[in-house]
Length: 171
Image (cartoon, rainbow, N blue to C red):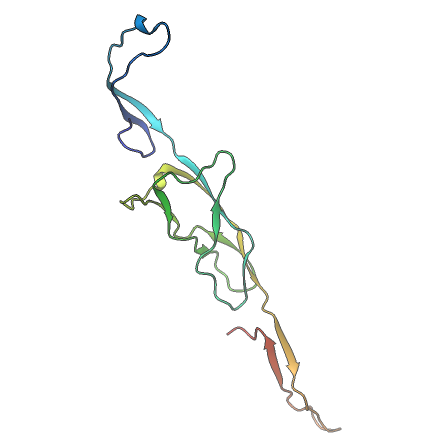
């Protein structure tokens, strides 16, 4: 067995109670040792975190507290190992407040050992982060002239008044 579960190269592996069993030739062999140590590697587990597409807000509204994501089920990618879990959230994006698209970044999302220690487990993973854009869309408003406004012939235009409806102006 490996001394620990963490990814690494040339890790010590202890073996005990090794025997040749099965087959008609098993009695033709004698093992020089039935226990000992060897070296082997544990490779990083490939994980692809994919930000969900289509996340938006209306200009002037608050950003969401976090952005949603999923893990890829494509060939070659896996979920997290038993006992590991995500901590934190995907909660960051490119700076900007006006209408447009902004790349979502990983934020403070980490992989931790949830079986008791809370240790950082990211060195055990080959993490791919697939971003998506967060869109700020136009704020829908309506501007309506107030009724009953007029002027007399030959006079200057008065200051006209109006009201703003819809979602209103962003503050």
